[in-house]
Image (tube, rainbow, N blue to C red; front, side, top):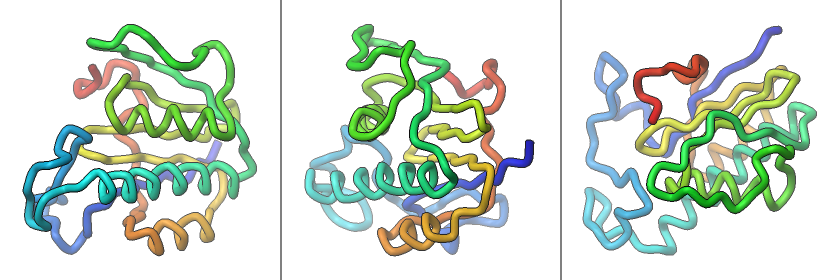
Length: 166
């Protein structure tokens, strides 16, 4: 199955070094609200603006590629054993959006997949990896309008035994 893979981030690629490492000072966690970085103090409003951009972009890729739901896989509830969804059922609509939002807030760690090969993988520091079976130019354009950067990039989280996985 041919899957197109992307890295979606709030990080401008022009601020990466030759090895692709982002070198600028920027917030990376929900818990950074109230802290200072190169842009000043991170407010709840700014955090939620960026978080919503990620959630909407994820949904845009899924829908434009012909999907409507994803299943939660590789769930880890380190420090928070209670889930706010049924992990045995596919997630769609507002529930999928809410679970993505809670993943970004690190309430739990998980990935999303479906039988057609679509996926959403989340790394540390607000890195989102998207896999879809077709190109999604409208989702890419909408992501850019929201201030996100979409780059062709293979997800480093395909294998369940990834070293960076909690």
